Length: 214
Ligand code: SAM
Image (cartoon, rainbow, N blue to C red; front, side, top):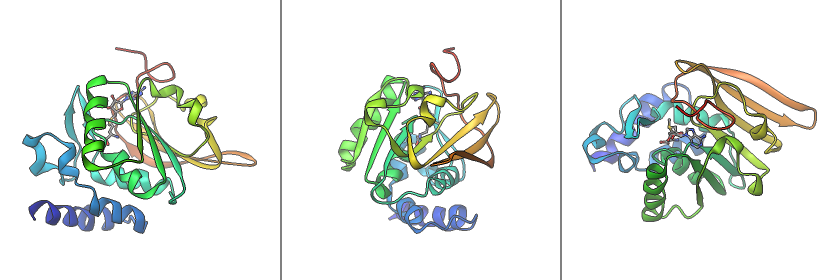
C-alpha cells in the first residue's frame, strides 16, 4: 500500500538516518498510520519531514521531533505516561504502542473530541483522554513514569515536575513564543536533573502555568 511504503521511508530516511535507535520507537513509528491523524486533503503529506496544520491554529509535530521526544522518555511497557497537548492524537498513539497507559490532556474541545473518536476507531484502548488545562497535570492519576509536553512553555511548571515518580522522565519545550529548547528532566532520590536536547519550535502552552490566554 502507498501509505505503508511512505511510512517505512519516513522511518528510514528521517528517523533512523538522524540517529534514533530505540527499537520500540522505530517499531511504533512504522506501525501508527500517521495519515489518519490529518485531514484528507493533507494525507499525501503526512509522512513528509515537517509539521502540518490540524485546525484551530494547531499542528501535528514533525515526525522526527515525535521520535526524538519519545526516545528521550526511555519508555518501557509498564510505564504510565502523561501527555499535555493531545492535538491530533498522533504522539499519544505512538506512546500507547510502547507504554502501559497514556493519559492525554487537550484544552481545545474540537481537537479533544476528534482525537477521542479516532482512538476509539483505531482501537487505542490504553489512551485516557481529558478536556482541560493540562498545565496543572492530572493529580489524581499521578505520579507518572514519564511526562511529555507537546507545546512550548515559558518555564517548566513546578506542578508538573511534582507529578513525576522517582525515576521518572519528562520532556518539555521551554522558551519564548518563537523558539524553545527541548529540555529533558529526570527525577531521582537526590532531586531533579536537567539537560538541554537542542532547539525546537512549538505552538504555545496556554494555561494557568503556561502562557496567558490570548
Ligand atoms: N501532540 C500533538 C500531536 O501529536 O498532534 C501535537 C500537539 S500541538 C503541537 C500542541 C497542542 O497543545 C495543541 O493541540 C494545543 O491546543 C495544546 N495545548 C496548548 N496548551 C495546552 C494546555 N494548557 N493543556 C492542554 N493542551 C494544550
